[in-house]
Length: 114
Length: 111
Image (cartoon, rainbow over all chains, first blue to last red; front, side, top):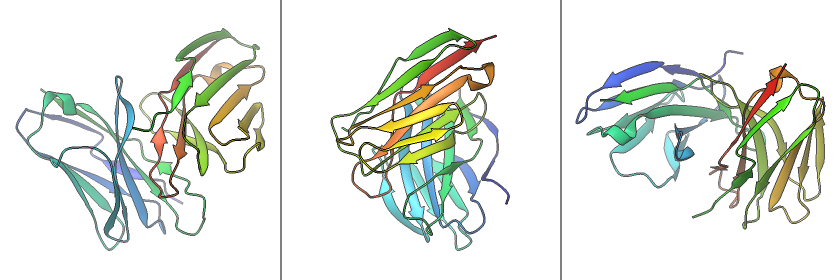
């Protein structure tokens, strides 16, 4: 089975721009979660989508948004980028068939805002 | 804000030594997971524990879930350079699939 893939792997943007990141989950997984990882704050939960619906949301401003498509692929968007948005963005997929929510992470997208 | 504290933050040891990493919270977890992350990659799930007092072994790694389900430990026996990485615990306190990650323990095993 192919793992979780994320594109692009690296991205450099300027303050004020917007960015869209993509995540393809493991085949058959319907849940996709997004996390932001920074040296200072660690791994922080952004949101989780299940069957195209946002099921959970973390404590991030409205500039961070996401969506999930019918094939379970997910995108997250960050508008009006700030320097502090520089981070590794990780997505994780999970199977609904197990009651234990085991997450499988992609390699991440490294976003640098200048 | 729920907080998962890990200790120590950093650990540098010689190959062959034993070590223990701790994950503590004031909240009760419905389940708790341990991950290892290597540079440039996403975290990889090592184990999930769900029952208070549960002990799970994965080769040289032993995971324990506290009786009250508020804390957990990871013990590595005879550490090897391949164990080097960032170890993260993650807990779900509400059963809503919203995992809170710990602050992380960065381990370096020297050959």
